[in-house]
Length: 489
Image (cartoon, rainbow, N blue to C red; front, side, top):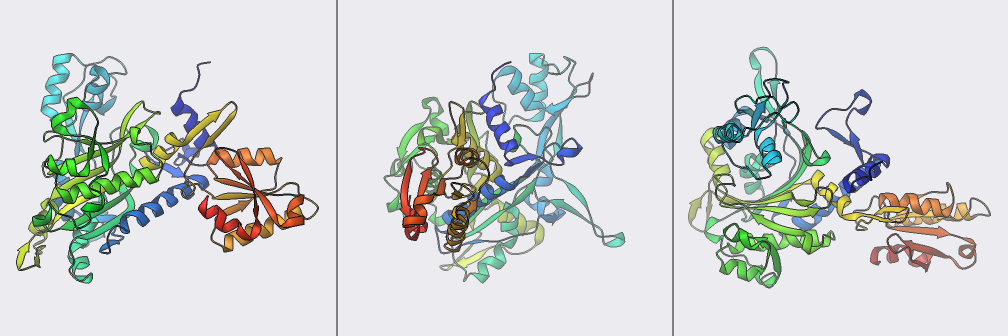
């Protein structure tokens, strides 16, 4: 039997331990949809909470909102999604198999075809004699498919066409006017959304990386375009070194450039400041810097309205390559101007004696992709021992509390300790089933940071054994100091 790949190993572990699994699995699954299980839900929510604490904490004028997931057609006329939110589709004339045209090209020619028009893709398929990867049949002409889910809202004469939002960003744009006025007309104004988005992907693949229903965490920062080259807190980050692949110097690969050097190269100070914060966010999550980079898209690859576009990429062993987990985009005034044109609402603001439409800097994170990234980076195996090394603040539980045996009052004492920790705000669980070694192993497998064992010495001196997951080292700690110790480990 062939040895399992790294990807297969972690997928098997996550499916077994209720991280996530195919939606409606008892009916054979539902392509492009996944359910988060009892373990995965806790990790996902902790990641989202950390994202909120970090990014909403950057400025006093950054807020989270919860826009509707269903929006009417004019919203997507204004945003350009009705016309532009399409993927190139090609179908086999023999077996009927269909796939993204650029994906088939990339898989067979081992090149990147992102941003190539359907007409050009069609020409290249004929030129290179590309055939159906399933049966070798001739491919039909390349067409396009709009990726939005749409349906009728209402009944009879009041029917309106509605769409499931393909991104959370549009909610921030349509809410901007009210939020700007409600928050004392401050700029920059940050509006964050953590929620679901929906795309009718042609061929969902790679588990959580290309789904039809997924979660985004996005921050739209509205600001005065005349201040794009300044940020009051830039001195705090000017010497920080970022790992960047500039579009104009791609042949050099990753470069280690300070924020100040990036500004000297012509990148706007306002944007570079937030790039530094994005990298800091990932460093706090334990992402090694040598596996992280900002990959800049050139003018042909990025959306026409983006004045600046970096993919935030992390090298994942599962795929053997750098993979996009977030996006960093300077969108200009494209979005607010589009909604002003279609809605008829004036989206401009009056600040410092001038009227203008704010520009937008977008920080966009795929929550599901980041969830998987934690698992890819965190998977460890040592002999027969397998576990996920997760930062304690995103582990499903901070600690497990275990009586050495279920008798002599140790179980009662262990439950007292578990309740005490819960009251102190430490998320922990109680487990008395199996040997202490098996309990440690079960907890390690899902990434629980610490194991707390109540033994006979505990009954004598009110101390417990605290075991750290990665090193397996143990330390005696007084129960009275336990909660604070777990917060500072």
